[in-house]
Figure 1 (tube, protein in one colour):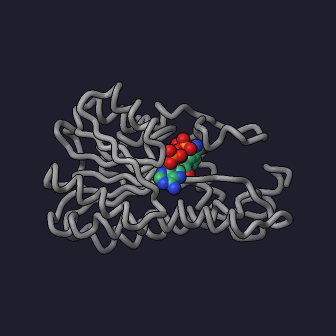
Figure 2: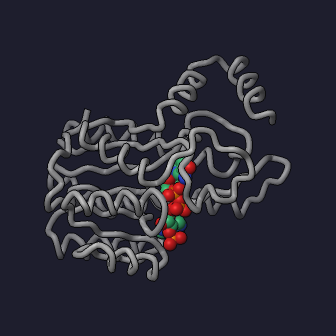
Amino acid sequence: MNPRIENWTGQVVWLVGASTGIGRATASRLHGLGAQVIVSARSPAALDTFVAGHAGAQALPLDVTDRAAVQVAAHEIVDRHARLDLVVYCAGTYRSMRATEFDLDVALQHQQVNYVGALHLLDAVLPVLLRQNAGHLSLVSSVAGYRGLPQSLAYGPTKAALINLAETLYLDLQPRGIGISVVNPGFVETPLTAGNAFRMPALITPEEAAREIVRGWQRGHFEIHFPKRFTLWLKALRMLAYGPYFAAVRRSTGL
Ligand SMILES: NC(=O)c1ccc[n+]([C@@H]2O[C@H](COP(=O)([O-])OP(=O)(O)OC[C@H]3O[C@@H](n4cnc5c(N)ncnc54)[C@H](OP(=O)(O)O)[C@@H]3O)[C@@H](O)[C@H]2O)c1
């Protein structure tokens, strides 16, 4: 569905949200495969540690909610490398929330980081990708964006928006030779999920997630979802009519 990225040597890859977790593990894997990796997130110290352990990698600290900062970083990369081969949006925040404890500030913060930040990135890199008629943009969403889930009041809608954004971008950009993918992980053991009090089914490591993601780009997939033992089950639930869907979710979560 997308141009396959099979040879990573020298590929200019910018990962936003790569100081920890899935983004960091993916950056590390791509660095190992020979890519020129640029990592962004808010924490300069964590990015510097990454660079110290990955020769030739570059750190560009930024906050994705700062539109100008994302523009400046994109310009810096293009000035230095003259192109962008792969841009990955992994920045994300998550707090469980139910309607009985609705917090508008937290919900808006999810919207800013998980969705508006992706629009800021889009605004900064789209002109470059369109000029090149090449390159790839990948948005890390979640299976939580498939359908409504309990405790997902702040997080789920932002991930649904990202999936829709990726689908729409694909329709517009694939004919121009630009790759678009959406990554929908199940549960991955990272700082984001560390606070979950419930048992996370089919939990995997960030390194396993990174392997799946890179394999998906290599194979040219539009949707990269994993682990299949969990995501295929959620995909089946996605097909159900509302009545059986709500009943199945209540049964399996007890909520
Ligand atoms: N873990 C899972 O089970 C799971 C499942 C499905 C989807 N996902 C998605 O995968 C992505 C990566 O999550 P993760 O699990 O790897 O969590 P993580 O380790 O907490 O990583 C989140 C990354 O986003 C960065 N970030 C957060 N707010 C930011 C901001 N305002 N500006 C710039 N960077 C920001 C964080 O760095 P700083 O704090 O230094 O800024 C960090 O690098 C997220 O989009 C998440 O929703 C995760």
